[in-house]
Length: 234
Image (cartoon, rainbow, N blue to C red; front, side):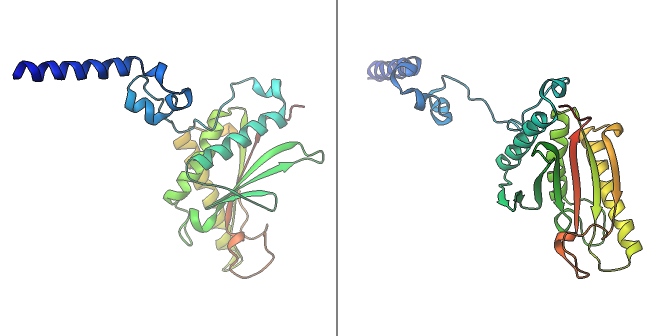
């Protein structure tokens, strides 16, 4: 009885082994390439998706080869893709890409050539009311900017903090400056962006309103990060 069981087990094991060895020849290519089949078959270890896979990168010297506009186009597409594949889908609104807590804009010249990217971080999402301490969501959004600047090393940035018009101007000015510095420190300490790549870090209180009102306007409470190249190359 034991011999029969062992023989049956051996036969079934042999068939299973032959199936695994020959699975590449009996399954359609599109199915074979799927992660589900590869895990089942064990023929190929599927590549694990890594953070930044969608961002892409360019080595030093690419700016001279591509020119400013094409260099930034690659950065723009990579940054958008990286945001979307990590759970921040965008909706096109008035020529901008708007996601949860963040907005991605193109800054173009008169000939529609891309000259800078503008990342607008929602102030209500990024900071507790009246404070300059970054929230976890703010750090998550800033991490995308930091990853992009690391992957595209011939870039620099300008950071500006903005508030609404509620409260004393002097207090709002101080708060907006502190918030812009918080974003800079996050990029510098966590993402190793060196000092020379920060062209400007400042706060403007309510001097540059999006909506011209003295009320507590949400759109006016924001931090703006402009990402451009170290120089303009045609």
